[in-house]
Every structure is written in C-alpha cells, then in structure tokens.
Image (tube, rainbow, N blue to C red; front, side):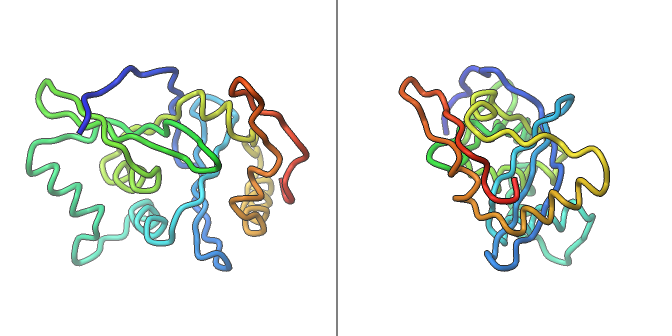
Amino acid sequence: MAMMKGNGNLKEAKIFSLVLIPLLGQYVVTLEEVGGQRLIPIWIGVNEGNAIGLKLQGEQLPRPMTHDLLTNILSALGVKIERIVVTDLKEGTYYAAITLGHGNRRFEIDSRPSDAMALAVRGATPIFVDEKVLKKCPVIMKPISDDEVEKFKQNLQNLKPEDFFKGFEEKPGGEEEEKPSPPGG
C-alpha cells in the first residue's frame, strides 16, 4: 500500500457503454469525459465486464461476487473507496489506481481499470482519467444521436484491442504520432 501521490491533471469520467464482444470473449467498457466529448474504450475480461454489467443493471445476486466481497470487507473495516483514476497507457495497456480513505489517511492502490471500475460502480465512486492518458489514446468523439451510439457499438464488435492502437506510434519525447484510423473507427 502506498501513500497517495499528487493528483496530476485529472478529468472526471463516467461509464458511457459496456459492450460484450462474443468472438473475443471480452467486453469493451467506454468511459466518457464528463463535460467533454472524448470517449475512451478499454478492453476488459468477461468476468470484470459481467461484474460491472450486473451492478449497472441493478441485479441482486443471492451471494456476493468477488468485487462485492471486497467492497463489504473494506466497509466493515471503515475504509472508503474515494475514487478511481485511469493513470496511464503503456503499450496498449491501461493502468489505474484506487484511492482509499481511512480516517485522515489516504492510500493509492495499483489496479487494473476493470477491477477499479467494478468496485467504483458498487459505491457510486467517482472515476477520473489522467489527462496524459487522453493524450496517449486515439480520440473518439462522443456520438450525438441514438443511431450514432448503436453504430459505435457495432463498430466495437469488429475491432480488436490491437487494432485500436495500430494507428498510433510513440515519437521521441513521449508524443504520439497519428497514423490512419483502425477499421470501423
């Protein structure tokens, strides 16, 4: 457990969509920048996708699942999940941190974004994305109409995680160089 570090430049986000990609056995959770137009698709495992989806749909299972259990343990110990932050993007892999509070102490715990989001939806915990992640990932602008949202979800069905990052290469100095868009993008 590490003590909490500085905040950086964080943008609040919320879950925009959760789409199952049956052929890949994965979900794509898309985060929406609050007050902005940018979307961030993150490929996650089926178990984490199910954990997020069940909670978003208000499903109540007879026994606690893993993320419910962890939430219950933290609550019993008086620890609050204060926020989650998608902190970085390296070689097509997103990183996250969970900020925990206990009394006057704050702790930042390394996490996969999928597990962090599965915990966040259980307690209405705010989600943030570090601005450097938004600069590193390809920009997808938020659809406006219901038809555009459906088309976006259909395009995700045909896109693999590696396709999403094919159009970007890191330039010296940490900047990203854009190349042609991936299929469906």
